[in-house]
Amino acid sequence: MSLLRRRGLWLALLLVMVGCSAPGWMGAYYLGVFTTAYYFSVFAMSWDLLFGFAGEVNFGPTFMIGVGAYAAGLMNNAGYSIPLCLIGGAAAAVVGGMALAMPALRLRGPYFGLVTLVAVLLLLDCIVIFASVTGGEIGMMVPDVLSVSAEVNYWYAFGFLLVSAVILYGLSRSSLGLILQATGQDRIGAAALGFNVTKHKLAAFCVSALFSGLAGGMLTFYGGIASVDTVVSLSITVQIVIAVVFGGRRTILGGILGSIFLILFDELLRPIGQLNTFVVSGIALAVILFFPDGALGWLLRPRDDA
Amino acid sequence: MRGLQILIDGFAISSLYGLGAVGFTLMFGVCGVLNLAHGGIMLIAALFGWWVAADYGAGPYGGAVVGILAGLLASYVTYVVVVRPIQRSRAIPRSEEEIFLLTGTLLWGIMIQVGMDYLFSNNPVTMQPLMPGVIDLFGVRTPTNELLIAAVCWVAIGLLWLLVNHTRIGKQLLAASINPRGLTLLGFELSSIYLVVWTIYGLLAGLAGVLLASFFGVSSDNAGNLTASAFTIVILGGLGSVPGSLLAAYVVGYAETLTAYLIAPTLRPIPALLILVLVLYVRPRGLLGRR
Image (cartoon, rainbow over all chains, first blue to last red; front, side):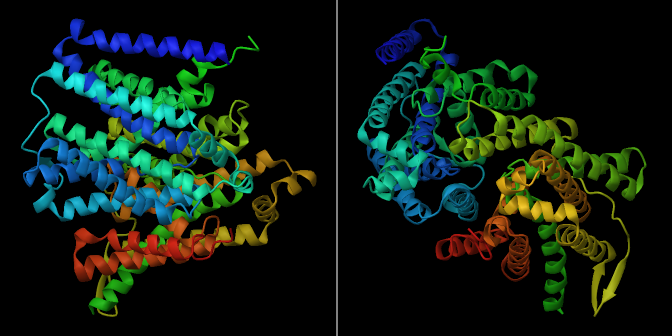
């Protein structure tokens, strides 16, 4: 156990140092790529809290991300400043997430998955129907942006990622994480031990929604636009799934590795055009089949048998 | 007049939905697999059928046969490459198998969609009608093709019913859905039963794909939506219940047709989704679900 913890700690420290030094040696273009990857990492980590720990297949992360992003964008268009908009967006995401979770958590497994999927489809329809307010399929421009400098944007994203990672990782190691894990594996057993399963899942949903919505809002103010393709589309959900599975489910931090892998690969494979999604999904599928614990799970596994 | 048209169109669409969903629900009922690559398999059947029918002059019937075979092959590949390795993997705990099957087939479906996009582009294609012409049905001009499609759907569903209820292999399938361990104890090889299910599933999905291409036309962008519709219908009807799925197919089909005709075509998918959410909140196991 101490070996495991130490190895993980060193790895994390190394990554933080590489991340801090990046603006020194990385070009503006790749700083932009990593900025996106960092926001994406927060999506992935919040999703992992539900998927890996609570064992709920939530096909609706983009519902919370989208609600956060669009609420922040709408507030900004109404003249509020960026910090207020971010808070408003996060609050909207939590309210939206609760509205979804309260009834949906009565359902189990595939039923839960489908209801979260339907929430995303309905949100997509709403955005298209109220196109005069939301910009429809084209997207909604926001008047303010975080910064025009790639370096400053990078620091915003990096700082946000670090804070979220520490909080989410801490939560996953706390009693909340343990209880969630127990409910994910044996719901009745956990309930019999006296834990209020629904309350804990609801708490996990809230935290997940909070960070998803905040990240969605930040991404909106980074790109200057909230659009279906960047924050709501189902392909975002698929990418989140790939990132978490590749990085290692139930590790929280694996989501960061997975997201960076995903976005970097997307860049590197650009020459082969539309086939890159094929290759990335194929790699993720192979990871599921051969290394179900993902990259981080494989790196950090206890090597008693080796 | 308009009411009659809604009745006829809704019937054809609903029958097609029913055919698309029964394979999906059978797969879950017997094998416990929710195949999120379902839309992808229908897409493969539709696009290969269209390709052979149009580019090789095989005609609509030749295209349909090739399409169904392509669907069958895709179903086998899904089983052998994705589902069976997950089911047999020692590294995946039993309790998490369901999650892995969902994510695995989801990724596989994306691969199919992108692969088809690469091969055939994402332009919508429509297969030539199996039977051209129009029939005057109680004063409503209806394409013959539409009626033929509805008929084929019902013949296929009827054959499935006969197979499940009146043959030896069908009884084994029923038994496998109720108590797989009991069946193994009686000396039946569970893996060969699964193979039969994947065969039936492939044929049904292939047929549904081909008919879809002939009725609406398909594009590689549809794969996700096709899976979502089948998923919706199957959950609404109750997982694993074939009659439930058929009932749900008609609810969804008519809800969509009514919206498209009476309110606005753009709002088409919304009422079905709202019905689904409502039903699940009131009755989480779906209309005719057992569990």
